[in-house]
Length: 426
Image 1 (cartoon, rainbow, N blue to C red):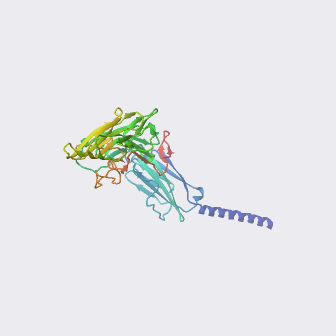
Image 2: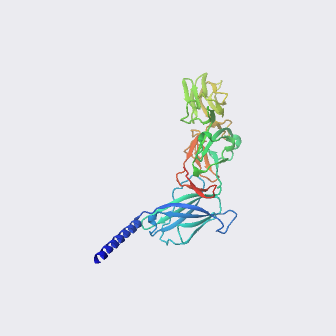
Image 3: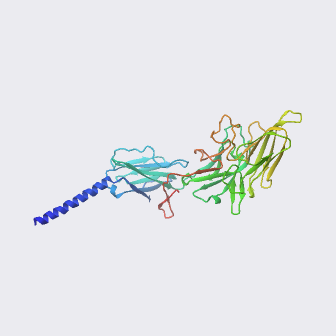
């Protein structure tokens, strides 16, 4: 009998040790918030306005964290649709407070209430938009965070605004601008070649911000292409621009010849010609063999030389390359200096009778803004810049701009079955 009691006590002791070991392992397990789920709540919360959406949030921990002493804190942030970083919360508060603290977070856009169960909260949203929901869990050893993006209703998507990188001036009217360019916006992983190409008049942009009425959601990443002309292909229409590298054969822009210099590429710098002898031929022509479907590229040629009496003389001429007019030929004589400005966008500086032409990449010359008063002084004069919405952050476009959202947070949005499902940004 004593032997049986001893054996029974031995097994009880072993089971006790195993239980203690399991609890100890759980206490040492790293913090992990596995998921945050969302359910819509109907007719459980008093309505505070005409528009209100109520959702219940449930956080799921790793099973090994359940018995640990953990403090929780919820954060809600109304996301501004602009180019920015959403990867982390700023100024995370790490404070010792009971896990059962009842906390309320309130703003003009939302109201969050945490009840006795800190893993289950109620969120009321009063304005459509994107909201970043975060739960921060803290114990004596570490802090971990889990965040999601929640789309409520149909948020107002910002428009793309455009501007030229030139100094602001009160006397720059629309009459001081000429020509046009083209833009193509790719958003939400749409196929680039099927994206719409939009012509933009230079006079509409001039020196201020121009609203293109094109919606761009930066949470879904986006790309903007800009160019001077369109070229037909067998399958599609392609956007081309002066100075853009990497275009297939046949899509190149322009080249020029002067005397013994042949086949020079036209880029974004002015073409400088010095000490031009009698009857020198200066020719600009299409370098590719594809058909242009739209676009005009202008040439403004400024010349300093001598007249028939030997006196200093300044003259200028203007011409253009189009789908029909494939080249421009000029005969120059007795010119000690000439500058050729080439592009689809023309800008007439105050007190000048001629236009300076450039492409969306801008003009690689400091003479038009020696004091560097333009918004991006390190970028070429006239370079195309953009922003999202009237109060957005300015960014350079040139001939190409790509913005990739780096947060990798899933976006939860309401589906046809009135439940919230995750959609990955990338």
